[in-house]
Length: 424
Ligand code: GLC
Image (cartoon, rainbow, N blue to C red):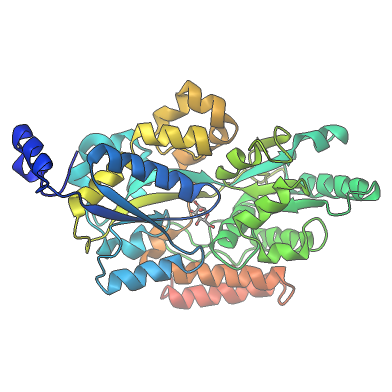
């Protein structure tokens, strides 16, 4: 392991005596982690374990949920060395690449352990700017006990989900559970809404907003149908307040026992099964529904990576920490305790991972291999602006300000202008 002022001498004996004489100092590496659910706790445990093993120190900071990217951009553009290791979203490598170091040499053939699609996603202009840490894909959580009580099947299509949610919500409310909702998801105007909406659109064969060649495809009847369906949920099977929900708000309602279905990421499984969770052992997990018989299951790929800032004063140590946290051993620990989906395919066959997190990691395996991604590679540095336009357009439909067809038409012309006619 790497320790500042120590490894440079490269001699064990010298190292030992330097340590004893106190000349050899431990360095501090600052890592910024997200703080959803168990994220911060698990990041801190991993980073502390590295610090202990390497004889260095870590400083774990959590960045705010909203505005994280803007904060990173501000720090990095100013060349700040405040943060050495950054936790970055799967859609950010293109946006932040110029500020991140190339980890290729450090990782060597270790990249082969990970899903090739994620390594490809994190490689910008032949530079590996981030290492995969955990993968995400949208999954459907459902209440096994309620489905059983009403003899309902796990829904295969969104129409089935709507009907089952309505039936159970009405019946349960009539017998006194008046806070029960059919379906909770992420409807706030932010990146999470982009993920949810793209899942609906793509499940109806309405494309991925932009195609692989950069052409804007969102103004189509399938996308309109998907969006009209989702608009119908608000205030009926989903609370009006869903328009203010992120991941944690949806989980809060579901975990309190007040929803039949929830769309969320794998991390929620470990939490809904916590010892003190009112729905412990009552929850099943399934692939997200299809958009009708002709549609397809379309969970969107998410996930987080670890990157080293170019302005770090300890780039070697920072890269060491990244290697430690993204290693198979640490990913295994995170999968077992926190149900975070590994980015290392071999771990999906590991017996202890399968016992602890199987229900969510299983449906993800195929998705991760084929990677139904948001169009961040093609939109590159414009991804964030692009996604904000998309979620604005969706939000305006869900909140009743515009109808679906008009909103998508206007969105398509805005995106066409932004992309200079699909060139991006
Ligand atoms: C999850 C996903 C990430 C996505 C975010 C949206 O954290 O891993 O990729 O952008 O949710 O809220």
